[in-house]
Amino acid sequence: MNLEGEIQMIWEFDKGNNPLFTYPKYIASNSKGNVGVVDWLSDAGNGRVVILSPTGGILNIYDGQPEAEISLFGGIVSTKEDNFIVNDAVSHILHILNSDGEYVCRFDTTSIGIKLPCCLAFSESGKLYIGSVNMEEQPNLFGLTYSGC
Image 1 (cartoon, rainbow, N blue to C red):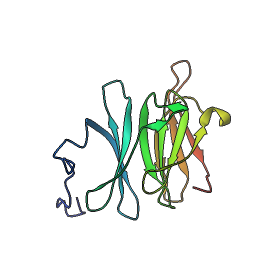
Image 2: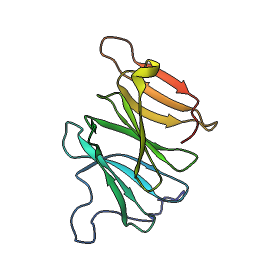
Image 3: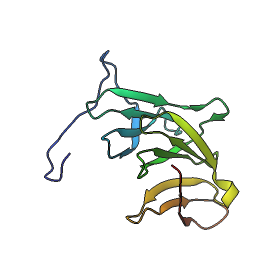
Image 4: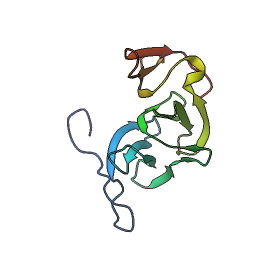
């Protein structure tokens, strides 16, 4: 949708006329026009990230790495470098994907004291904000300066 409210593109089915998504939960786009969609496959939050091209083709479907089975995909954001960051709240992991949705690396947020990262956002200045909900503590919001992705 553009700023005037006009629909620009609809993604619903793949080339085989199969539904692209089960439960599209979060969405982000990068400056290349690629769109990352966190698609939950059940109400429990286990799912995948579908990366679409500006023309609607599937660039990649990411469901985690063998050593990092996804427990609960949460938010997704795009970096200035056009990479995507998606969080896994239960595993305390940020998955870094390139602009086409291919795995680059992962980051364990507990290494900097962040447990259960549940949502992500960037400020205009480029600071990454991570919302955290820990049932034993108060909810927290962390502001981070990042580099390299």
